[in-house]
Image (cartoon, rainbow, N blue to C red; front, side, top):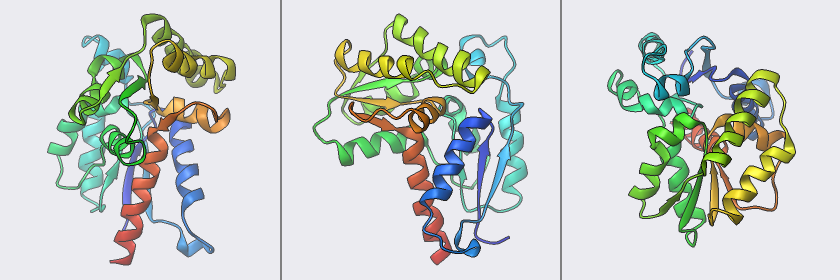
Length: 236
């Protein structure tokens, strides 16, 4: 297969499925041959990213992710995507292991905010406790000259409940809980806009969309960047 890219997915599988669904849905195709060429690595057994970030005695996801990068690099993809925000904790190590470009989902998300929402200054960040702890979004927001707005301990506990107890464990989105988290970030924390900084939250947005509050969906942005690069590659 020529002119393809590789998706390092499976973290979690249903969130990766949501990313693929959006990608295929947005591809301007009217025949089988007009869809994109890609390889999906659904590496479901990668150890939990948040568990390791919070406690380094837990299994380390990096060796599994490096294995995927090394294996896939030998096939010659044009670029990699990593549809898991928390896994970007390992971004520098993964990019250093290959000459193939790896899209940086948090960075692309903040770039999108600067482009589309120039008046937004206080940027709410939601995600796993691992993403909040490793500050991957916080660093990108600060680098853009914006103010990061973090969840309280109570909001983060609700977010982890939604991500792990609802979506990962039961494949269920609690719409009341999901919408309450976002509303609290706007009303109580004073965010101008809220980043959905976990692909399970993106899955929640797909299934139970919030249409009233100002949000930026990191997975949706990664889909758009993936599509842009893939179409440009195909036309080259």
